[in-house]
Image 1 (spheres, helix red, strand yellow):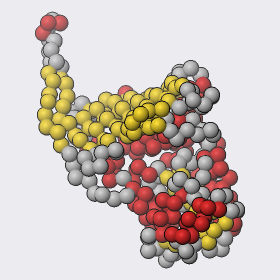
Image 2 (cartoon, rainbow, N blue to C red):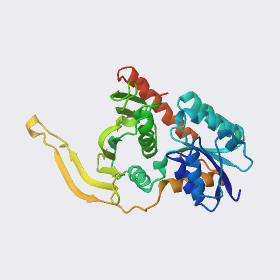
Image 3 (cartoon, rainbow, N blue to C red):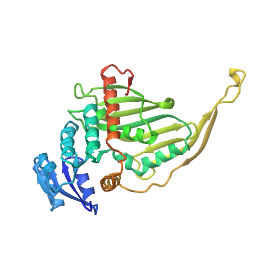
Image 4 (cartoon, rainbow, N blue to C red):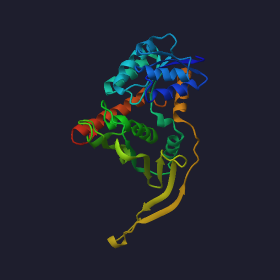
Length: 338
């Protein structure tokens, strides 16, 4: 396929970013965009005059001028639209999270596999230079054995009526965690509170239990005065902070640690040795992750490669989200992930 013709469903918050990125790629052409708000479509046409528009998403799926469809709508609509696209024999690029429940996610994975189609989930951060650098550092063993990970994704709003803050913000951190650590959690526990909208948590703390006694904490909130996007990886040799809000020095590696004595006879002999070494900031390429992801989607279509954030990875994140929300409803107890 020389040029992949793209249809985009949803021109609200994220859709315009997809339209822009695919339009700037030489081997892609955005042919049609759908949204219920005509003013949004008019704005798209003012920027990209050759694009057709529609108020009916089914026209995008059925269009003979479309090879792949981007679904950038509220999560409750993902399943119906993505399934219809796959059943029409077209590839799918769907915004995170993949679906609103595990059964729907598993169904999409099976349909895509059966029909030999690409199903890519928009876990944008796994395409960022910073996250890939963190992954390489962890895999190299430079940090030593990972003890724990602490992640915060906080801001004021945007409040939503159909999903809670866990479903809205946590997919980013969950996709980063599973990608960097190379495995999914065995269990999860979550606590949270509904302060503004009754029954919809706007702040939550999710605890994830990974193999090898690794634990991770993910704090998400719509009720914070500052925008925070920070992750701390603590290892037996070194520590690392990844701060996505930082414009330049997104990663800092700390040669810090603590060692106990090899032998001691009395409690008085037991003294820890604290190590304070250098702080290292690696150079990172200034590349928009979404552009990398869009290019990767096209490469998967052309080469038949497995997406970095495919349906399987999307399903895994939905499994974690479902388990976390089950824990929220049941008082914060530990829930195993099957």
